[in-house]
Length: 324
Image 1 (cartoon, rainbow, N blue to C red):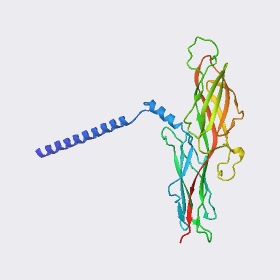
Image 2 (cartoon, helix red, strand yellow):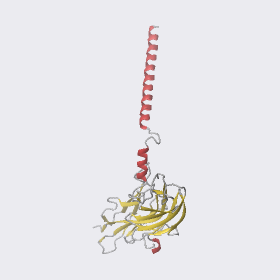
Image 3 (tube, rainbow, N blue to C red):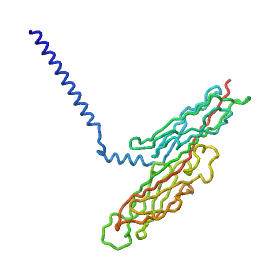
Image 4 (cartoon, rainbow, N blue to C red):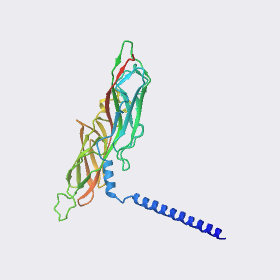
């Protein structure tokens, strides 16, 4: 009887210990998760800073050869392998039909069988959740290097060209005042003045300046567009699939489409009137006028959308040597 009672007491004690341990673990997990979880909107300052960073910058798609792929020297019995890292450092998401890579500059009768035109793939742009943007890796390969008889080395300058369609959206806040030149005792909330935009809007082409002029209840905006990147602007209708070859025409170069709207006014007109802008020396101007609603000064966003293509390149020299 005594032994049985002792066994029951021991079992009860062990059960209580297990229960207490489980309870403590549960409380610890809950406390840790409560500390690490940040409800949406709890830190608006950090969210605002992340949004600003995600929609700023003057880069779009960047590409580069990965180190030693290809190596600077290759024997003709080895495979030719070039690896390219493609990064979307802007704010516009790319799908597989928006961006193409093309490797040129070599004799296809010597370095044979290279699939020299390839899509960049689907690559997300910068966002609050990924401030660096997405990336992809593309491979070019040839297992058939054939040096002509009597040729002991071949040193081509590989030219990697990438072409892509992109979009930049700028939304500067502007002040408009339909009663600017009328005498009034009203304490106005703002005064119409020009706005300079530095740092870009998440793309190689962006808005750098917005001038504001009031004529009665009409607001006139002078919008300056610049190519901030190292490449060239293409029309959004250009053939980007094969742009590394001589397929681009004069009409494809330095053209972009634009659209301007404002919530606080009605569009009267924009010039150029066909919603197409041609850049000259990497810059261009758009003039838009809006009929302003209301009877007092106020601030409102001016939404400027730019659609364009872009071409850029990088180069690497390689030396192919005949195997002894």
